[in-house]
Amino acid sequence: MVIGEDLLLRKRDLLGVLERVCEGLELTDTQFRLAKERYQAVGAWLADASSPVLRTLAIYLQGSTAIGTTVKPINGDEYDVDLVAHIAGLGSAFTPASVKKAIGDRLRASGHYAALLQEMARCWRLNYAHEFHLDITPSIPNPACRAGGELVPDKTVKEWCPSNPKGYKVLFERRATLTPRLRILEGAVEKRLRADIEPYPISRGPKGILRRTVQILKRHRDHHFAELDSCLAPISVIITTLASRSYEHCASNIVYDSEFDLLCDIIRYMPNYIGVGTTDDGRRQWFIWNETTTAENFAEKWNADSQRATAFYNWHARALAHIQSLPNIEGLDRLTKSLRESFGTAPADRALAGLTADISSARARGILSVAPVVGLRIGQSPGTTAVRPNTFYGKE
Amino acid sequence: MWSPRRPVLTAAQQYAILKASAICTGNGTLKPGRLSWRFEASPSPLSRRYSVRIDYRQGATPLVFVDRPDLVELSAGRRLPHVYAQKPPRLCLYLPSSAEWAAEMRIDQTIVPWTILWLYYFEEWLDSNEWKGGGVHPKESD
Image 1 (tube, rainbow over the protein chains, first blue to last red):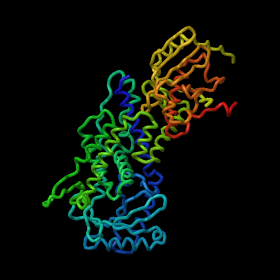
Image 2: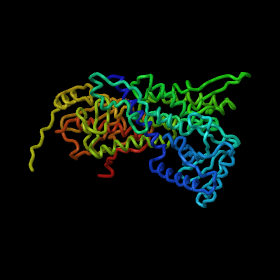
Image 3: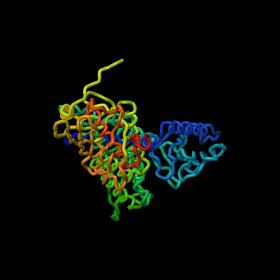
Image 4: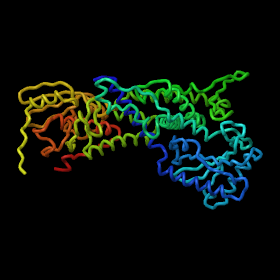
């Protein structure tokens, strides 16, 4: 028995369990298709308006739904689906309030949308009960941005401020496709186990490790701040930006034994991408720049309330410590308990139940086996022992 | 179609087979007509490691015990499912007087994988309080 093998196997399985946690939290394909149908219909309705303001309107996804990092909200069951209603033909002579109003008026003109409509500070929300809500934020071109950025209302809806949802998505997706460097297992024992120690199942999956990392962290944040002041929680774009920059660094510069070690490093290096400065009067300032446009600091609110920065660093340390401690846990029951403490009851329960359902289904289909070192394994191959049909009995 | 019954495996044969098996590497003792085999097993990489002991008298039911960790302690006051006795816990792995186990069968291909499967469902039960491995209790069937 080599300890290293045990640990590699455990880390591989841990990542599998974390992926199950994420799968239970994200929009399903069916929900995604439904959301897409609905926002395309809204887009068509808006663009079909007689209002000259809306004539060149096009609607598209931004945020977590656009980049595949959705996480079910911890309270309530409606996902946020963030949309941009971009009006290519408008200049900044139109005030944010007037553009927002034009969109609201058009939505109210439909009995269907009027019933779902809710006004938010910077956007319009269409509430589809128990499914998701569509948040529609107006946007116009930003001629000053060389990267093709846009302008969106600030939170007072008085000024236009720079943003670049499309550019952000392109950059995130480019980083997500980077292939991490993982050590190829060598040696006789490793060869025997290679089929069992697939070191990077997630990187090869459709989501990839970066999206999973973002989802894990967002859920950890939601759970962490549920018992604290949730207003202090770092916004998702901060987590996403820091994780994607850290991932680019890790994937490009470091060779890993396991994807789990990569996950820990992505989290560990996130704070390196926060710029810290001091104002003339000695106050600390934080900068997490949107790399795809100029002058959008995602950490802007931290500079108005430094408690937000403190809350970020405290949460980050907790999240890293928790994820790093997972390989020390022995026992499916203890692991599930630990996941429950960090991610909540439902996703932890679902992950364990899914694991067991796979084992039980393989057993019923006669394809469950026992492999040396590994334990139960789905599928049979030379060197494994089939689990023959049995009926557990017992006087107790 | 008539087929010849396979011969009963002797305790010495079972012992040699257990010794050679890669899924229950361990050690034991062999005496005339009976054996005792101890090994470490884990149902999954996320699970604990359990010290398992199989006591077998040729032709009788193999007795399976988990020596460590203490299952009773782990179950924190709940009664262990699918055991013949609570202390020391002796696992009930197959339906007696069925064809699931017979003395012609190799212990490493039957009792050992079933023990590992039992341990998986045990850990799941520790958390969910639900035995998901199926099975029967004599009260239901007798």
